[in-house]
Image (cartoon, rainbow, N blue to C red; front, top):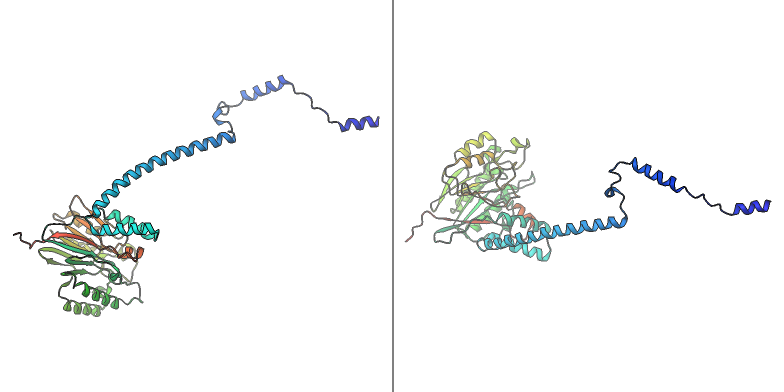
Length: 377
């Protein structure tokens, strides 16, 4: 008996067969109480194979959409490239920027410079056409070199215009008197290339703003330079004329003490709203060239940098300036044409261009105006 029991324990017992009718009724009962939405085939758990097929279909659809967008972008890019090439053939600074950008792309150098030059090319696309007729005056304009004006390759022209910030006033360690002396030496060299030079100060030239202390040293330095260079003219809220063309220059900019509540070392000619308003209201009508260090708000500048009073005055003028040159905002070197008023705005600040691409020679802008003293024979 003991052997028989041990033999029975060693053999596995078979499980009783389930009642088929009982299982079927249980399944039907569980389905009947399940919501219809859960019985939907689309919400059932997918197998690994069906999930992979779904992902593959999604990838194909995305690739097709991306290909379609890329084809459109290539077409638009080809048209834009054609237009840029045509514009570059007529405007030298744009051609130089495109050549420099192409060179850096081929050598895969200076990613920061390539990004900056790409945006610069787009901002130079609205460049005004130069006058080919006899009697046109070629102007070369730049600003905000902050001691590095010698790094800018200047194209040939008849008149050089500089819109302020020739020195770098970043604290007590900045020797702005020596910076100014270097700038005057550079202008002396340029006076041999250009028939006339007009320049204004900026917010870094504190040694020329009498509102911020004793500036006798800087003023004497300026007077000595102007006495030895009769073809160079300094404009400080005043008008000048060259070959019948009217110019006005002002170093005034928005006071950051008013807008930000901060006092900077580089705060020369920064004025409050009650001082800037009367100045801009006195801008003469019918100017050919307006030179200001500060840009008008909303034009080739950040809103915090631009002057809203200057923008309002320009919008209300019956005869606004033909050309408005400015700097101060280093990020928006370029050209913008106002089709409503006909004014061509030019931000000529070189600082960011020289920082992004130190060996590119900057990007001084040029434009032509027909002289009013020229008589056609």
